Image 1 (cartoon, rainbow, N blue to C red):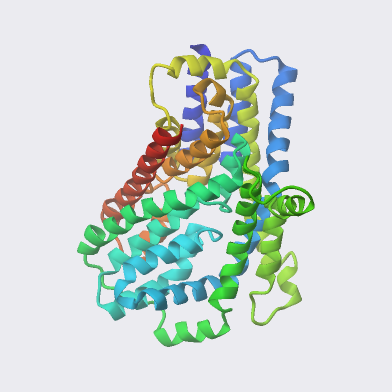
Image 2: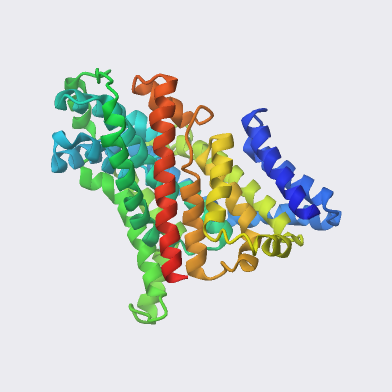
Amino acid sequence: MILILVLFLCILFIIFSSARLRLHPFLALLFSALGFGLLTGMPLSVLVQSINEGFGGTIGYIGIVIVCGTIIGTFLEYSGGAYALADRILKRIGEKRVPLAMSLIGYFVSISVFADSGFVILSPLNKALSKRAKISLAGSAIALSLGLVSTHCLVPPTPGPIAAAGILGADLGRVILIGIPVSLLALIAGWLFSVHVAAKIQIDPIPDVPEKQIRAQMKEAPSAARALLPILVPILLIVLRSVSEFPTRPLGEGSVKALIVFIGEPVVALLAGVLLAFALPRKFKKDMLSDSGWVGTGLRNAAIIILITGAGGAFGKVLQNSALASTIGNALADASLGLWLPFLIAATIKTAQGSSTVAIITAASILSPLLPSLGFDSEFAKTLIVLSIGAGAMVTSHANDSFFWVVTQMSGMDVRTGYKLQSLGTGVLGVSAGLVIWVIGLIFI
């Protein structure tokens, strides 16, 4: 009980220090790791070794992957590629179906572009289309927001799911294969909420950018097909590797399989995506690759995520090297929470401190040493745990979440409307994803 009490206090400290004291999550996680070890009587040498090994081991596995994913997202944003991809989807679906179009656009764009950036990039287009279709901006803005969140929390190579897969030892290809249909089913619920609830609140969609200027920007953007390649190719390579390692060996053995496994390694696949991203700008300049250029921007953005991920790994290693796993496993054996346990942990942390990525990393770090005791140590179960954490990390976006303010301020919503639409909408999205994962677990576990 002492171990459980100390863990509970550590979680409260992470939530309180990051939400109230504005302490950086990197330090909050490291202080929690140190505090847990000291309060539970862990030998000092073991405590220090656990922190070092947990930090280094986690970064060693996913650090490069996060950097590559962030660089790809930066090139998509700055080259206009994300905008071109959005325009192509709109032409296929039709301007009268703006909320559906914006849901799908957000869904694809957020696979590599952070949700905040994606909303900022697409907001002028969203406003212009809503004005042209003579509909309220509220419905299309929430549709875009929920589309961005659905893949941001569930589909690699976004940093959160990548980090959770690395911490829990889940196969990245499986996470992608199952995360895509889960996120799409959740997106349906989000789209229905946007159309039947959000769209009833009238907000005049006055575009900040004239349509002529939007079209002028589009002339400098790469084609939608080129913009899709840096996202699609790494995903296909990673999935192909996962398929090649199925027990039935569908792609055979030998050198061909070895090559597929090599190019499907997340590091190699994402590096291929980076090379494809370099081809996105219409007018390529060497400065884009420098420290002060687009690559440098991507590296700086990735650094924070990597540090938080490493600190989460350190916290998880300290928990792993304690007797916590068997203690909590026995304590929760009668609770029968199943796949709702990771969901609730992530949802609590997300709602308390605001960041989905921090919630995913922290929840994964807490659950990593507990998987065998909870009966979730199979490969398929680990995949569902990653996705359940991601679903919980959607719940719920409110005033302590920077994305809440991006959506409300760029869509002309007051705070009350933001809570009614953005907060409730992310709650609907997360719970819907959690239900889908729970049903999958009932059938296959």
